Length: 505
Image: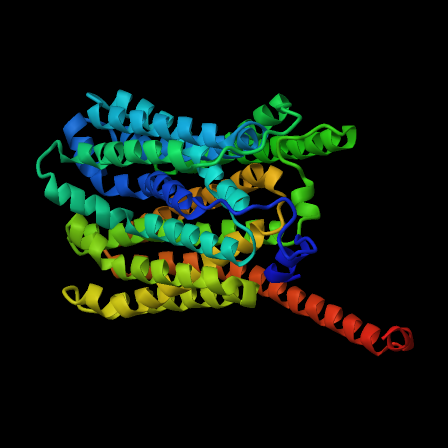
């Protein structure tokens, strides 16, 4: 079933979707959520360029500094599904605004932190607030938009995801260059405060209240099981640079076992007629959800780790400043931004084919960049790689936006928050794997010499291997869609040509 067919299936006899009345403020409300989403996702990568300055200024150890990045990622992922379910059951407007206020307060606390311990604590709280905001973004799109408009809205959302992830190094480098001095890193956090306050004021005015479910039961055992399972899987990954993978390997089977118990508990609640934290039928009966979650998780394994590898290559290998390093990967962000908006308008027509073409473009772009940077002269490396990175960015824009739309298009609105939270949890897990594995592989190759270019090629090749797996899954779903449409078309033709239909005509 195509996205257009799905949307049409929800329409009433007058052509308007049953019970749906367009909110005249829906596009302005969307921009409020996108600004907040941009800030929360940007804070995953923007801090990375400031870590050396933070370490020197606060006299921190490498392990402590790593928690500034990994602690935020960890609490972000832990909150997603629970926050989405709370938004579905209560009022996602209230959850969103409270989380946004918390994000602003904890951003200010990060900027004012006098020592590394308080900075890490503030970052953990900031990540938790971001995790409570994130699933409400996609849920608001499900609530406010229908049909082709929903595709366009998810296109802007996909552009936000792509730009925030890829532009973090550039914006971080720019802030450090403008706020010169040992205390300049604090402005990376302070910049969130005025933007966040403005978003809160506009959100109070523009965001709609969601219809409250008659049943407000919260699956507390499910919350604990899912939280422990995700924590067990992610903690060794966020501790990778301090030997977490070798020291804490036993947490992976423990996490998998806990998540197995979680799934069985969710099925048990469904059998009882009780609303679970994450309805397992999302993965078994909602068209495209399971495949889309898999595509997104596999894609983010390569996509997220690539930017740390590029930063290490340019700053450590080529002695670039943080700003120049960020500028070197800007072509990818520019290509991704434009393509995501266009893809949102095309997803109704082309469906999963956009994701297939997008993944092929990212693979070609990163592969071309790896080969060019392997043999390019040092001074001209960014200019030589810029065109292929731009191509990769266009491909990236055709991956994120259509995949989110195709994954969430058939999800009922009253499950939109939990579904969006689960989708983003998979992406955060993929990002944790990528940011742990790719830089680790980069350093391992450097251990046998000073071949930064060779290490870059191997790390990017590993990222491409993960994306090839995502491409295979997307091709499978695309072909399945084609077969389904073909069967529907054949059945419609047989009905039209049947004698019974002729007599009725």
